[in-house]
Amino acid sequence: MKRHTFAVALAALTLSTPSMAGPIERACLNASNGTRAVCSCIQQVADMTLRGGDQRKAARFFADPDAAQEIRISKRDSDSAFWQRYRNFGNTAEAYCKG
Image 1 (tube, rainbow, N blue to C red):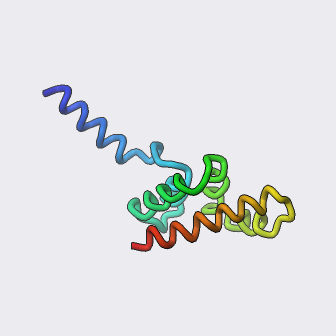
Image 2: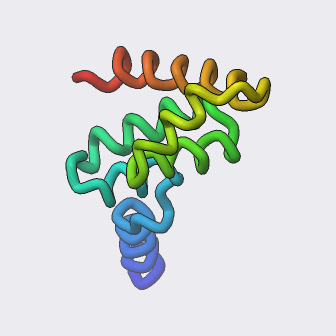
């Protein structure tokens, strides 16, 4: 009985702890305009389409949208490559999560 109770408590803690969420989900939730379900869906798409470093970079856009513009207009090849991956993520998230 104690093991079952512990397992249930651990599962509830895992599902409800924002620190267990990915960087996109945390940023989405902190932006206060996303529901947990939508932010979780967006994170799932990020997990499918973006590497970890790309996710962390993209998560910053929630708090600083100007950073996205700077990346978008940058002449650096690495920024252009990231922007293509980010656009793919955005288009996929829109299609997958619009509900």
